[in-house]
Length: 179
Image 1 (tube, rainbow, N blue to C red):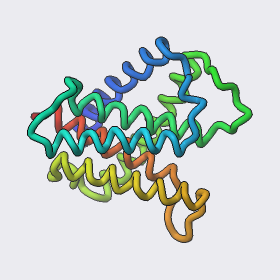
Image 2 (image 1 turned 60 degrees about the vertical axis):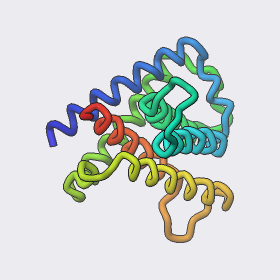
Image 3 (image 1 turned 90 degrees about the vertical axis):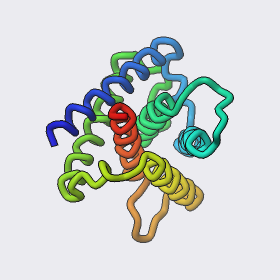
């Protein structure tokens, strides 16, 4: 489990670095996006990963690692959006944005540790392509929840799905780093 924590923290640091740099470049323009738009952005990234996994030819240089980082960062943005209301200011100070981001990553890591304990690190025996498929399934569920105006009968709300997407993408980054 210590190895997983170290690897998770390393992957998280890589994602944080991208988030911080993009925040410096673009500010928090993403605050204008509704969570449904973030879900669609996540869907595009996950479909690109799946396409790269199945197609023999790749026409855009960017590989899957940057797409998994994007999945993590856009999911963290969605979690921040869920916690902030529409009256919150759009442009956040970069340090505030970073603190909100790190809070979501920490909450998600805590969930990972609990699930990892219960599931016995089963993800280590999974294929990266299966992690991609699980992410796509979570996104299709999210889209359905959003189409139902956030109402569910028995299922968890969107927060759990975004956290699962982050953790599956972190696992994919870990597995990619091991290859």
